[in-house]
Figure 1 (tube, rainbow, N blue to C red):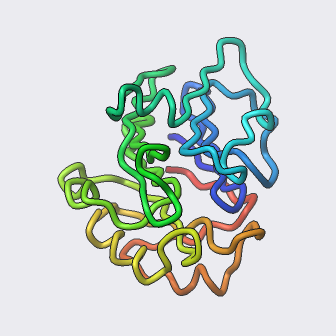
Figure 2: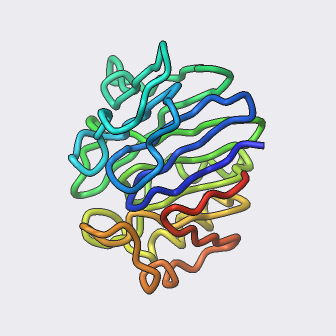
Length: 196
């Protein structure tokens, strides 16, 4: 089964059964030593786009919002048995023409990597997908707060909801994480790896 290592802030790594390694929004924390098969960047803010951090496997593919929003349309990709579909991400600090989230299918597990966002219209359609995991920002400064993120988690209806991006300049804040009140809530600490 796939595994997810939370590195802190908005950064995490997913490893598939066949050894494909995906880094999402690399920026901070530990665990960049496993060579990347794929690096996904949701937008170009400096706390999401340190593509130089992960080691890279031969043929590593980097997909940023530029590739994901080619021609102004959200694109789909398949890399090393992982299916990726770009989806909308937006709020007062993040222009939807320059930001994306990603829906990933890894080892038959579906993950919504929302990136920096607040509520989007597309979230209402995600309930029909029956997602396994959603990772949502809750800082309330550059993104929605924990209350709005909790409501988004209810709308999306994933089996498990993980709060991320809690406090600018910090890897993690347990007090803020505890205010995220969503069905299937999982609080994952930096350096903790979970089986998906």
